[in-house]
Length: 181
Image (cartoon, rainbow, N blue to C red):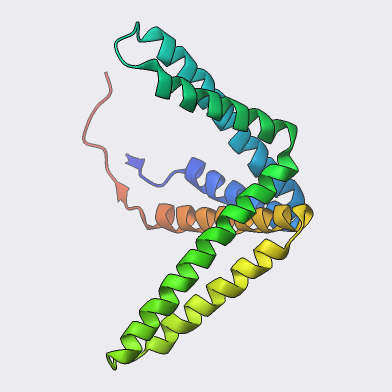
């Protein structure tokens, strides 16, 4: 018999939760680490893009592929050299999203209010909260931005760990009917 429940999944879940707590306790380090990881990913992506562009043997236009690869290489390198600036950039990108989403939610809420649809105030409140969070993020310095990114990473790791743990615990025990040769 074997089980779909795995001690390795439990170990992974616990590790994710521990790393999430560490990120919450050391949010600047977690924010910088996130920026560095993103930099490495872009650097590798750019290098592979360059290789693929030249390995194609002229079967497709290289201009756009080269441009994309070079941008990935440059941004990846910049993130590795200046991870604090990368954390600031990620926080600014998040603030732009919150700003646009907040305005959209407020517009949606006001539209529902005119149609006399109930509960429109929840949409309005959510949109206003998005705007406040965007303004807070925009006003942060680089260290504050790294802290915010670190908190986001920490919360994400903790939630992922809990979800994996709960999912793994819900798996049934199944008897094996196959034999290994």
